[in-house]
Length: 219
Image (cartoon, rainbow, N blue to C red; front, side):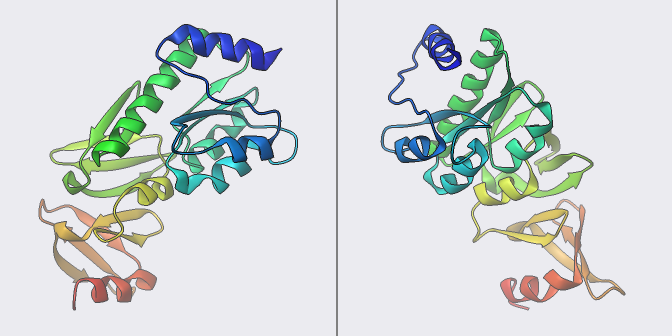
C-alpha cells in the first residue's frame, strides 16, 4: 500500500520515470544501476539490508538518495550516508516534490563537475575550485565560497567524498581545506598548524594531519 502510494506521488510530479521497485534491501541494491537510475527513494527500514545499508554499499555509484522514514531521529544518519534529503511519513506530496528537485540538482551538479550544497530550502551548485575550506559548525557545516559562507546540512565527511581528493585535504576532524588556497602555515604549540588561506581565513590543522599536509604541499 505505502509503495503504491509513493509510486502515485512520484508519477504526479512529472518528468519522473520509475524504472524499478524493490521489496527488500537486497533487491534495491541490485536495482541501483547508475546507467539507468539517477534517484532512489529508500525506506530506512526494509527487510534484509536497511535503507542505510543500501546507501552505504551503493555510495560509489553516483545515485542520488532520498530516504523515507517515520522516525525523525534518522535524519542525521541519512545525511551522513550522503542522502540528498529525507521525507517524513506519511509522505506529503509537496515535500516529496521538493526532495526530487534537490535530487535533480545533485545529479545535474555531478554531471557538470559542480558540488550541490543544500542551503536552507535551496540547492546551490558550486565549483570545487571556488571552495576555500569548510568547517563543522554545531550540527551543520559552514563552507567558504568566495566571499560567502554557506551553511549546509551536508556532513563534512560527505562533502569530502564529493570534492576532488587531489585538491582537498581533511586537516582536522572539524575542517576540510583546499590546498590551492593555502597562503601560509603558522606552527602551533600543539604540534599542528593554523593554515592561513589566500583570503586570510584561519583553518586549524591537527598534529595528526600536519605531516600529511606538509608532504602534500611539498614542505
